[in-house]
Image (tube, rainbow, N blue to C red; front, side):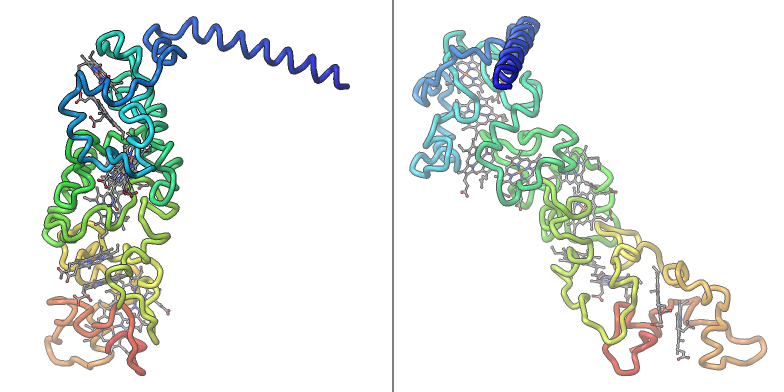
Length: 314
Ligand code: HEC
Ligand code: HEC
Ligand code: HEC
Ligand code: HEC
Ligand code: HEC
Ligand code: HEC
Ligand code: HEC
Ligand code: HEC
Ligand code: HEC
Ligand code: HEC
């Protein structure tokens, strides 16, 4: 029994060695030199000799604080992120001799991200793997910059940055009625976690309604008389980013309500006549419905706490 296992193990090791070997053989020379065990850590001072400006800037970056034991500078300095640099130094900065960590620098996105994830795995990054952005092959450096100001961390520049890849959202945020995204009073990361989340649409909260309650808590209730669609999903009536209808509504006036209240559509002005007995010849048509809309009477559209608010009238 033990012999069989031993033999199996040996075979496995042999096969693995062969695979690795042929793997290296076909790999680009560039990649091979990057992974070569000969690369050694050189330390910040060596890098500084040729990268003076970046090295000076690093001392003002949170990553450059050597007194904080969690930072790259408390470990291998620049090389905590860029990888061991001796080959790069020997070859006078030849491209592809260490991790460039940005689009076009050669190494796979996964390898770039691994350099950051060695330290950033917790809290907001817990759901990074399986997030939309991860599966779309975004690198950390698609959004973050280390050696230049970080546009996504700064409230006033974040939205414009995200619009580069989300032009449709820009259009929505410039509609007549909208969340104050342009003024940076509400920004993308107030509602979304760009690193992924267990909720829908990468929202920070677990459900869409919980997201809205965060800033509009009075809509949570509890109400004596609920209006079911409100409790279920605010986006049945509202657009999250912006709309051409007042109050970010998906549509206006009676049509909004008549999507679901078909019986009212067929009754038309009869609905009002039933209750208010408009008479005359010609009869006065439902001026409340035509001119304005259902909310003239059903003002408590989000729910009512009035003892007789069952029809959301008060
Ligand atoms: C002998 C000079 C020299 C030294 C020492 C040196 N570099 Fe470079 N490095 C260069 C040159 C030249 C380039 C290419 C031009 C540029 O981007 O500035 C470069 C480019 C880079 C790049 C960009 C690579 C890419 O693919 O975009 C990184 C990252 C880098 N160096 C990191 C380091 C680190 C980390 C160290 C210390 C271990 C270091 N360098 C030491 C000369 C040097
Ligand atoms: C926290 C991780 C991290 C540390 C530490 C770090 N870098 Fe970088 N570096 C990056 C990332 C990410 C990029 C690519 C995106 C960007 O330009 O910000 C980059 C890009 C570069 C580039 C190419 C910049 C360009 O515009 O061509 C150079 C050169 C470089 N780093 C050198 C250094 C040197 C030298 C140090 C140490 C003094 C250092 N880096 C420390 C993450 C880091
Ligand atoms: C050796 C560990 C380490 C590595 C590697 C590392 N970081 Fe960090 N990073 C830190 C620490 C520590 C902080 C400061 C956190 C704090 O103050 O709470 C930080 C802060 C940050 C911040 C917030 C900066 C700010 O101004 O508030 C961002 C963004 C960030 N890192 C991105 C990255 C990216 C992108 C990479 C990969 C290119 C990376 N980090 C690699 C340790 C690391
Ligand atoms: C699609 C853009 C995007 C990508 C890709 C991205 N981030 Fe972020 N990141 C952000 C935004 C936006 C914030 C600001 C969040 C906030 O202020 O609440 C942030 C904040 C951070 C912070 C600081 C505060 C925090 O939430 O912990 C760290 C650290 C960080 N990101 C690391 C990373 C790392 C590591 C990666 C790659 C695995 C990455 N990010 C990829 C957009 C991005
Ligand atoms: C007030 C909260 C809030 C803000 C601020 C916000 N979003 Fe959203 N976003 C949502 C909600 C809720 C949804 C899901 C409902 C929907 O699609 O209308 C969503 C959906 C999305 C979607 C998916 C759309 C689709 O059709 O699948 C993208 C992409 C998006 N948001 C990007 C952004 C960007 C970029 C910003 C910043 C410019 C931003 N959001 C600001 C709440 C917000
Ligand atoms: C480099 C391009 C790029 C950048 C920058 C970028 N995204 Fe995305 N994002 C994508 C792609 C690609 C998708 C998937 C396709 C889609 O839904 O549009 C996506 C999807 C999303 C979704 C929808 C998730 C879902 O499941 O419905 C949200 C929300 C989102 N991004 C928010 C943001 C925010 C907030 C920022 C800025 C901090 C940002 N994105 C920056 C490329 C990007
Ligand atoms: C991060 C906080 C925040 C979140 C989350 C949020 N809102 Fe808002 N909302 C605001 C702010 C701020 C305003 C602007 C208030 C003002 O201008 O007086 C606003 C305005 C509105 C308005 C328009 C009010 C008017 O009088 O025209 C509606 C409707 C609205 N939000 C619905 C929603 C819905 C639905 C959600 C969930 C998808 C949501 N909000 C999530 C902060 C938020
Ligand atoms: C059945 C449709 C419908 C649903 C569902 C709905 N709303 Fe509304 N909401 C409206 C209408 C209609 C208005 C405009 C009221 C007016 O003009 O008097 C409005 C106005 C608002 C306003 C601005 C005026 C105010 O009352 O503060 C906010 C904020 C708001 N809704 C948030 C929410 C939130 C949060 C949810 C989900 C919990 C939600 N709405 C669900 C129909 C709806
Ligand atoms: C997404 C579907 C939907 C939309 C849109 C909608 N409603 Fe409703 N509404 C319902 C449902 C479901 C009920 C509960 C019906 C029941 O109890 O039989 C209801 C009940 C009501 C009631 C009666 C209260 C009760 O409990 O019997 C009134 C009044 C009402 N809605 C008014 C409106 C108005 C005004 C609008 C437009 C602003 C509107 N609704 C939009 C689904 C909707
Ligand atoms: C002039 C005021 C007025 C207007 C305008 C009005 N309603 Fe009503 N509605 C009432 C009154 C009053 C009741 C309660 C009747 C009762 O108690 O018998 C009611 C009851 C309802 C009910 C619950 C009873 C039922 O018949 O199912 C719904 C749903 C409703 N209205 C929807 C609407 C919709 C949708 C609109 C817009 C197309 C609208 N209402 C416009 C006054 C109005």
